[in-house]
Image (tube, rainbow, N blue to C red; front, top):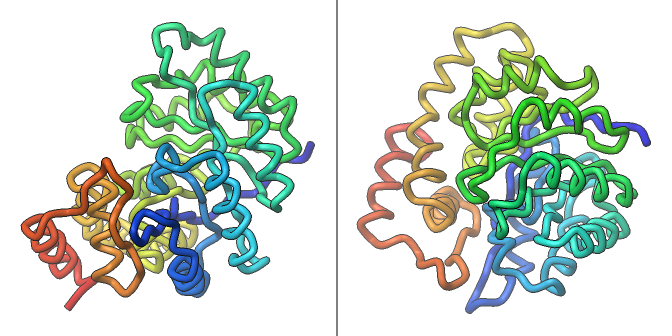
Length: 297
């Protein structure tokens, strides 16, 4: 199976809720706005999509609707990783039927002590063998407490249907280690905007960035400046965005990202319980950070 070109910027889109139900009209409005910003595509059901709070039925409906709402010029990637190999394969196949271009597959981690390299290699290889679309590895130790080594990623990159990795560690050294081990057509995607400039300079083809939900044009601009060799300008923009990225990822999390979206003309809304919305104090801190970064006046 041919691998896929993922050069560019993808936001891992939040799932909008109103009174606990997925708000599809608001989703459509968000997608329409994002589609005019130069983004390469969208990632549905990533960590920022609160996928762990969606039922199996909701996941399928959400992905099907995202594909329908997204212009044909953009790619759609869906998070399809579940705890069991069987369920991951079923969800990946269904998402392929809906028209998704690639599947983002997180490491199973509930039985983390048993998820050694042999188990992970067997898991990803089996999923890739049975997937009609290319799969991307998803390394997010913050949530899984499992960090995929460069040796493992290098071996998996040789599978004809494993097309890349989204690495959310923010560790540029690790990205460099991956770059040294993987095949030439393997897509390295950085999973945190704070490391975007450094990651692109080391050979990443793009990023799946929470920040791209609220500042898509700027993320695309950093990407483009690096492509054009304008490193000084790219560096300036990158430094300006670091506090915003920290706010919508490490500090305030998904509720903070949704609050920032509300402030910037998108629909963020409340997260799904047990996540709580940002407090008024947190919202005012987020607003200050957005003003400081000149995203809000």
